[in-house]
Every structure is written in C-alpha cells, then in structure tokens.
Image (cartoon, rainbow, N blue to C red; front, top):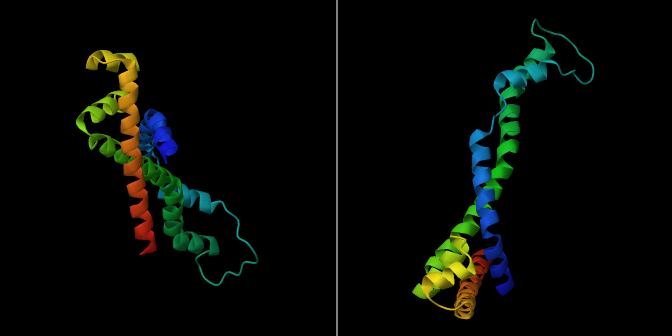
Length: 163
C-alpha cells in the first residue's frame, strides 16, 4: 500500500491536469444533432426485401421510429467514458487532498507544499528553516500516515462490498 501512496503522490500533478482536461472536453463536447442523425439515417440502405404497403416509405418510418433512441445512445457513448474517468480521478484527487489536510499540522504543511503546491525540497526546507534530511523524515512520517488512511479506506470499501 505504501508503494501505491507514493505512486499517487508522484502522479498527482498529472492527475489534476487530466481531470481539468476531461472537464473541458465534456463541457465542449459537441453532441450529434437530430438533423445530423436523420440525414445519416436517410442515406442508409435497408436490409432485406422491401414491401410498400402504405404511402409512407419504409425508410421514413424506420427513421422516425428509431432516431431519438439512436441519438441518445450515440451521444451517451461519446460522453459516458469521459464521465467515468473524470469521476475516478476526482475521487482519487479529493481523497488524497483530504487525507493530506487531516495529517498532523507539520506533516500536513510539508505534504501540501511538496505535493499540492509542487514546491521543491529546497524551497520547503528553506521556508520551514529545517534541513532536507529533516524534511525527508517528515515526508516519510506523512507517507506512513497516508498509507494508514488508504488502508482504512480500502478496508471500508471491502466491508461495504461484502455486506
């Protein structure tokens, strides 16, 4: 679990960028319009034999009956994968940020500076007036605390799944 926590910490900036990119993509997503779908369906060719028994053509009836359902399905197929990935990223980012905020004060400050703000080791050690070695010890203690938080979350998820 410690390796997982360190992986999440190292990937945090990339995850935040990906989440923002997905958010922009979902907001700018252009859905297929009804006119575009009807036009595409109009130029499709029927399968099998055609028997015309009314004034309304087979193609027109098929288009009228199926276009709304098909339109919703196509648009859903475009956006649902992005929504799922966004939800996973948002959940993971939120949990990490909350876990960091719930660390003891000195550890929380170190991890917020290093992970969330993206400061360098030297910048944080100078800001806190401590050596890089002391900063490494604080970071290790913070990762141990974060590992326990992730283990607790995992055991709660397992308990929920089994109940």
